[in-house]
Image 1 (cartoon, rainbow, N blue to C red):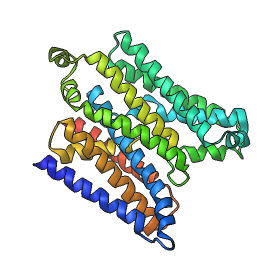
Image 2: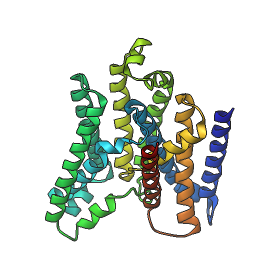
Image 3: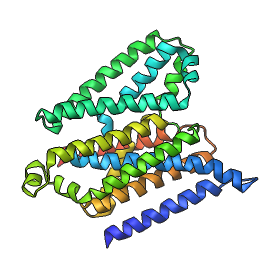
Image 4: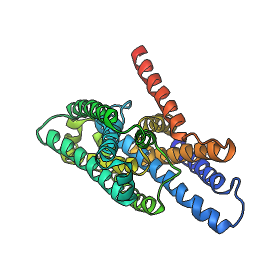
Amino acid sequence: MRAASALILAGLALAVACLAYLSLGARGDWGFVLMFRGARLVALLTVALAVALSTMVFQTLAANRILTPAIMGFDALFLLGQSLLVFTLSGVGVAALGAYVTFGLETAVMLLAALLLFGTLLRRGQDISRMILTGIVFGILFRSLTQLLNRMIDPNEFTMIQSAAFARFNNVPEGLTWITAGLTVAVGIWLMSKHRQLDVMALGRAASMTLGVDHDRQTRRLLAAVALLVSVSTALVGPIVFFGLLVSALAHGLAGSWRHAVLLPLSALLAGCILVASQTLFERVLHLQTSVAVVIEALGGLVFLAMILRRRKT
């Protein structure tokens, strides 16, 4: 009953947030307003869905609720790619590539790196904890290389890299939005169809294999789906580190259930509600140009610290 109530309330809150985003302060031709704001709303919902599902699945596989896929260094690899493009092609060259080519290159590089890491370590019999530690080491390496390149880049072109350091929702090409939305929805449907396997895998590798689940094979498949979601969402709007942690903590607190049939859709609804409502507040009410992702990341960081301190006390 509690889980059903949480889902209904989250769905209603998301509907209100979407309605407010589309209608608040709208003037002129409603057809143009809905078309313009609708594309940006789809981008917000796509990122929310990708971040929520990838975080929930990753936490289940890692058996740790204070981790997110960002710990594997996706954000560092994204910024390294941005720095490499600007360093080799200059700002004019990057602009000449076009949004579609840049999006394809960034997605392909992040996805390939993730699949190589997951496939190499997990097929050699290493556990997921060592894979996470390896991802952390690679993330540090990528950040160091990014800092080195940033010192060698023309200061006038460094602003392009600075703007890519935070998620941005205002300048997303409409065509890329629909491509990313299609991929994200398809992967999301597949992940939700795996909710029973995820329930079993949350018990651990030994228990999963005892209950008839091929844990290693399912882990590789699920991690590939997580990598795809993180890659396309990061390439679309930029890196988001702590937002998934904030959504996961709220979903676990409100669901009152460990079943992924509840946790996955609830986290997606909460993520959409938070992202759309925050963007509406900043853009329509307060008329601020600051990226809403900065504030959301700060809240997620506070949740991360609170969870760590609470675990130490217990």
